[in-house]
Structure formats: C-alpha cells, structure tokens
Amino acid sequence: MSLAHSLSRDLRSGVFAALDALQLPRLFLSSAPRVLLYHGVTSDTGEGLSAQAGIFNYRGKFITPQAFRKHLEWLKRDFDIVPLTEMLEERRPRSLALTFDDGYANNYTDAFQVLRELGVPATFFVTTDWIGRPEFMSPKELRALKEAGMSVHSHARTHAFLDAMGQDAAAGELESSKKRLEDILGARVPYISFPGGRYNAMVLERARQAGYSAVFTSVPFSLKRHKDMFMIGRYAVKNTADEKDFLAVLKSNALERNSLKGAYYCKYFLRRSFGNGFYYSLWKKLNYK
Ligand SMILES: [Zn+2]
Image (tube, rainbow, N blue to C red):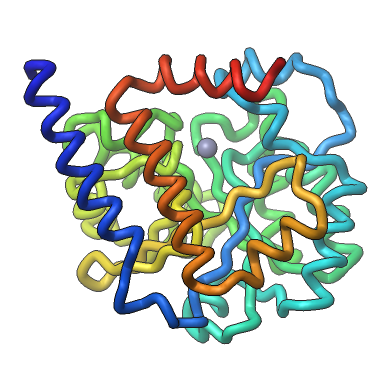
C-alpha cells in the first residue's frame, strides 16, 4: 500500500474517530459504563519482567498492593463494585467493574488477595499462550479465581494485534483462546479484551462469529454495539493515579469523559499513522526521563 493511500486512510479514520468521540447525542447520558483496566499488582518494582513479556511501558501499568487497596477503598465509598456481567446488564449509574489484562501471576498472588479481603469482584482477561509460563497464571490458579467468584475471559491467544492479521489468523486467535479457557474453566467464555485495545471491522465480525457477546477495548467510557455484540471501553489505571484525579475521572460528567476519549483517539491516530515503534519511543521519552 502506498504511503499516500495509507495516510489518507488514517486521516479518514481519524476524522471518524474524532466525530465518534464527540458523540453529541449521548453527551448527557449518565450511565456510561465504568470499567477500570488494570494489568498487575506487585511490590516488586524490578524491571526483569518487561523484557520477558515483550511489553513496553510495563512499569507504569503495575501498581503496589498498598495503592491497589487504597483504590478499592476510595471506590467503595462512592461506587458499587459489581461483577462485569452485572455492570453490563444493569448499568446502574453508580456501578463500576474492575478488569485485569494479560494474566500475570501477580494477579493471583497479589491482586486476588486484596480483592478477597475487601470482598470485591474482578474480571481477568488472559492471553492463553502465556498460561503456565513463568510470571503468568496457571490453569489451577485460573480455576481458583473462578471458584472464588471472579470471572476469567479471553485476551486472545498470542497477544499479537488482531487488526494487523489476516482474517483466518484473527479468527484462529479468537476461537482457540475461547476454547482453551472454556476447557480449563468448564464454563462459557463470552467476553474478550483485544490485545492493545486494537480492532477493526473484520476483527469485530470475527469475534461475533466466534460467539463472543461483548468485546472490551481501551477507549475510556465508550459503549457501542456491533450487531448483537457489545463493545465496551475501559479506563486504564496507571500507578501514578491519586485519589483526586482518579475519582475526578470516574465522577466526571459526560463532556469531560468525552474529552478523555478524544485524547485517546489522538494517541491512537498517532500510533496508526507513524507506527507502534515510533509511538512507543516517543512514549518512553516522555515517561522515562
Ligand atoms: Zn494486553
């Protein structure tokens, strides 16, 4: 594909994304889905993990058990933290759901302990090729989460971006990760969060055909549908969040939340236009001085 064609396609999708972010008719809806996205909880601040998992900006995504406990205490004062399915089906204005992506071992060893102590439910989206590897959860741990009232869903098979694949490869990721988790858990797995939050029309349609009823992205507070399938955005919590800005975001009105969405789409546009490598090198320059 020529550069000019690729740029014009990105410009078009950027314009549509910006219009979508405005969502004028929905500005005053108060029942935007509040779904928080975490990655890990650990007291280990070392950098050894990041190279192994091949994921950038890892450190900014893990928080300490103390910070996680504080988040839950703040949240419980203002919101009902409910299972993801309940939040989706009832969407009460004060309800909120917690999710974790990737399936790191610390989700079980650290996050789960805090969740259990405070009686809070959460959902874990797991990349199935990583199950049982060092630093990731085992099948037994996934079953233990489920038995304790948590839910476990798919985060694809290899964590490769689905929108960068051919149809058959994407369908294979969607179907095989679902099947693997269903075999491990002995239960239906109707939800998926897309690696990198990345998707396109092909990915959505393949997800629907694979039998998913809801897909989760990283666009804060968005709720859309693809035919009979829900598309739900999430707010990614960083380790720098303090009570003030954290709750300000969650309690903000629709206009403020939409400006967050706009910022997300700007980053998305940069990434699409200049490539992930460029985006992450810029990101690292800005974040790791
Ligand atoms: Zn991920």
